[in-house]
View 1 (cartoon, rainbow, N blue to C red):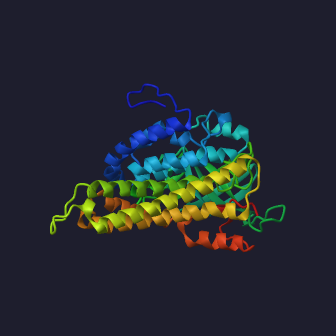
View 2 (spheres, rainbow, N blue to C red):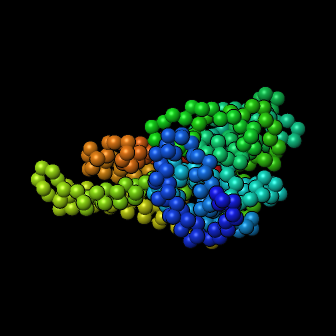
View 3 (cartoon, rainbow, N blue to C red):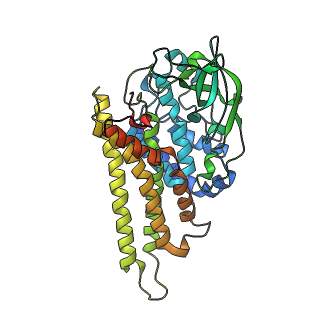
Length: 400
């Protein structure tokens, strides 16, 4: 890791250092936000600024020389980055998944493909590709949508269904009539499709990408249900989903602080009443603060309890297992609601492109289309609590 001048920069060694660097970077990201959005992907220097915070290495295990942050600390780091820019935070938390993926690979493979802890792995987990079994591995072909961060990544992981002799491959143990896996491919073997032109999260560069007949060795494939390293709270199936809710929480906090700053200086033109003395403004801000506090506390309460149980080697109760995905979804939807209400509160001061409210409105609307914030989570949690089969079982971290 180096500065722009080329001088070595010491990697942050713990959660406090990484969080401090993320908070220090947030004002810079806020200043760069409009340019990031116009660029439709993170500029190379912004990627390096993120790398300098330690966000990309924050999930790396201690045995690899990483800080192995708890899920709670990871989320705080993501919040801090999102306070500056949602797209940068989104790419930051996705790139941080490298350390989590390492838990599902053989140790010798981790040493081979991740010689540094701050390398970036991005990609799409949905099984949209075709992986044909061949001696020693697979031939992978496909097109995947919403590849956030693939254009600045070192490795790309992609979900694909497995075939043998052109026919669906069933798991040998009979557990899956058509097996799917994750496949790690060097970024240079991936072709980005320039189709990312969205309402919000514009700077994430979440374009489609294609992989064509690339050989993937057997040991460069994995599933989130088969940890191969040390068992820990971060070697669970849904570990890569936890900190993503830090993005909406960080944006909501930024919007609240922005609205409060405006309210302390603005005067109603028609009545001469200070906004700080306005019943309408006071009620709106207080309601939004209440919703934010409840949502954020729900996330950290569920996350902390989950961590405590898993760290002790225990088994989560159904209610404890269900609490996390519900809290994530609630954080996304509440953040969107808060931004919408504050946008209306500030009225015409929100509508110009120069206003951060405009970008926050579009960013929260777009991020709520992520699978983590969709009704399938509610459907799956409901089915699980009623003893049924969850459709989106990985969100519950459920092995079966």
